[in-house]
Length: 196
Image 1 (cartoon, rainbow, N blue to C red):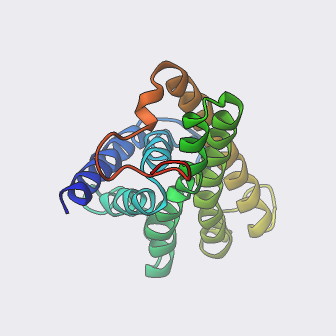
Image 2: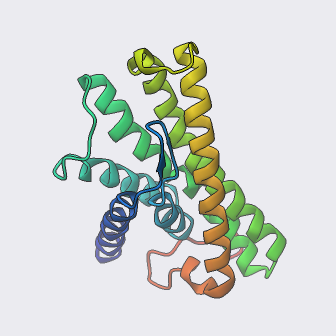
Image 3: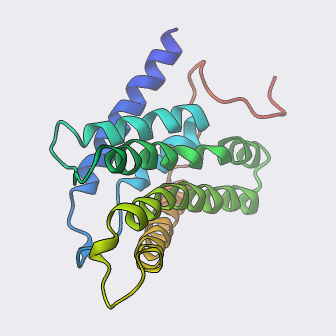
């Protein structure tokens, strides 16, 4: 139980860091953004795994509410954009075990591949839901005469890819500087297939 509490506390701290970084101005216009909060969440998900990553993403989404950092059109829109989307950011944790395996085998190529895939999957899974919300709920704001679906795909696609790229670059730099950051040493650490 103590290990789970530690992971939950760590995830809550990461979610708070993510929302803080998200407040830094990285918007270009009203629809394009690079979400710096994705960086600590991805690192946490790669360090702790899928379930803790999803939990931290969910907390990140919830923190928007007391801070008044939401754009409200309807209840379904808010649920999709702030609970579902941020929850899905934790899907970077799908690559936690491959990363641990690669680190255990001292295989830099596989470790970097796991970081790249984790960074992309987390960012694109999150921005998929922003795309859905943009298409369904924000369609009247589409610019240049584009259909709502195309406009949302372009804006959220570019935002998701840019967020993923920045997340990957920073995560790789941190991995090369502090590889132990990705290997928890407590009893709740994720075990690789070769570990006993």
